[in-house]
Length: 253
Image 1: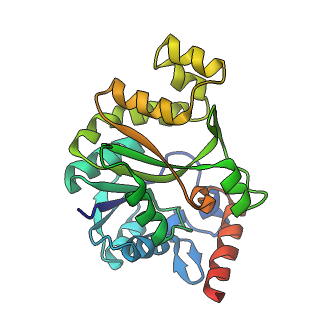
Image 2 (image 1 turned 180 degrees about the horizontal axis):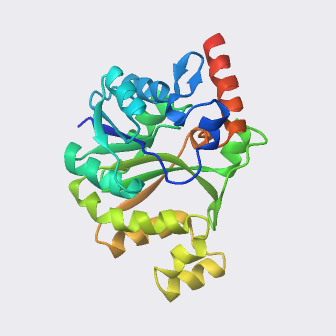
Image 3 (image 1 turned 120 degrees about the horizontal axis):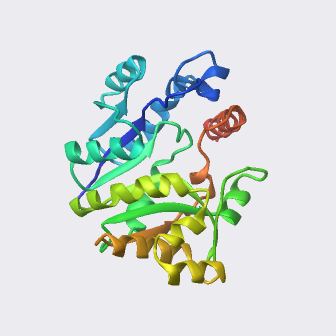
C-alpha cells in the first residue's frame, strides 16, 4: 500500500528562523532554491516517488496558501512536531511517511528506497545516515551525531508510520526529541542494563530503537540511508548556500 505523506512546516515560537531571516522572509518553507520554494522541492520529490496524497502541517498563512497551490491538503500545526504528527496520523491514517519542509535536497529514490528497506514487520521505521556516508557525500558538513556501538548516526527527517500501532510511539517521540543530543539519557530510559551497555560502548543504535519500540509494545526499526545527503537539511544560512549549489549542480546534469 502506497503511503500518504505529511510534511511538517510549523512555526516555532521565539526569534525568526535564521534561514528565513537571511532571505527577508518569515518562514523558510518559502525560501527560493533555483526558482522554486523549498516546500515545492519537498512536494516534488514525494510526487516523484509516487505518493499521491500529501498534507502540509502549517500555521503560517503564506505557507498554507503555497501548500494549496501545490495541490496538498493543509492541516493546522499543533504545538510541537510530535503533536502535529499525531494529528496527521489521525487524519491521514497509516501507512504515513513523515518529513519536513526544510528537507530541500530530498530525492524520490531516497523515499522509495526507505520504504523498500523498512522491514515489513515494523510499525515504525526511522531513516538515519552513518557519519562516513554523510562526509563522503558532503565533505565538511557539520551535523549532530548520535554515538553508538554501531557507529555515529545523524537523522534524515524521514519516518515511516507503517501501522496504526505507530500512534503509541508519539509520546516516546517527544522524549527522543528532547534527548536527541544526549543519547545516554535515551539509554537510561530503557533501564540500567541498557545504560550500562551504552556506557561500555556495546549498545548499538539499532538495538536502542528496537528496545524503545518493545517498551511501548510496537516494532521499531532503524533503516540506514543509502545516500549520506539524506541527512542534510536546511537549518542554517550556510546549509542554504550548500543546498542551492547541490540543486544547481543537479539541474546541470
